[in-house]
Length: 320
Image (tube, rainbow, N blue to C red; front, side, top):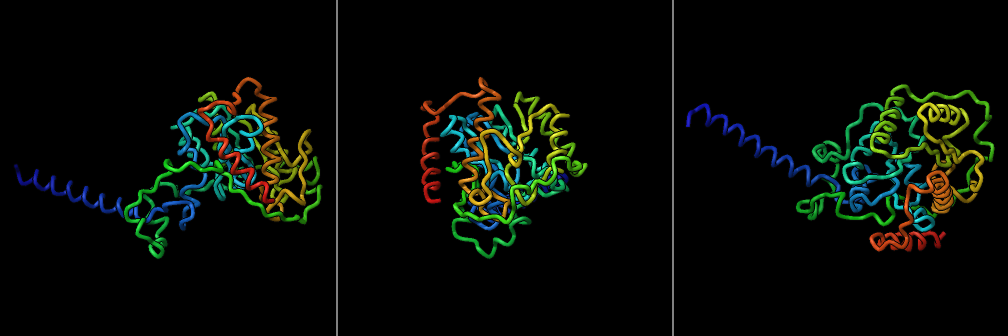
């Protein structure tokens, strides 16, 4: 073996050993569950990865409004549809497209719902906090709280099924300061979203269409952040892309928001009562809009575990 070849092998082995050490550090620092520091960003919104392959009918994408206001257990209990609430704090549209791509690796949803509150969040370049190779940089503060399990337990989003299917339930009831006219004038001038977000919306819609996924825009009740200016803009955008838009802040047949009982904070995030009402209406819309698209799986033995989620959810609901 030549000296040059020995040098190449030495460099290669050095690289392999260095990468192995670095990767082990990544495993140590990465949050092991959602309750660890940084766990919210590493795990939340990605629980669909733990669901059985091709078992989800509907996936809802968005920010904290989604994991506060959409209850998959209700959708199954009332209509027999399986779903997941893929909401993450301060979610941006570019990250939602990454989540959509990850969803399609294991799931073939029939419907993708895009919650529109995040349309007005600027999608600047962001580091993907779910990438384990970035853990030492994203979660470096975890050195202060490391436990024995962190040195041998491998972080995984695939091993533990979330009983709440992405929902973060809250029994707290906050009587908001807002009145029923919080949306303002119906004739308000449309408020454009950041220009950068337009291409991300188009990317989301196109990806869904290429994969034969029905898509519609949804705005969950949000007295503190939504108004007719945003509504009018998103409505026109939905029409441009040929998708439906449900705005639950506007008068709807079969749904009525209660500002005194449906929020866990001052008009921004829904509690479990509000989530139940909103989700039941969304299920009603799906059934009427796509009557033959989804099957009622309540009597399907392959989906019997969903009844445990319903039982769990109803137990939380009874505590309100």
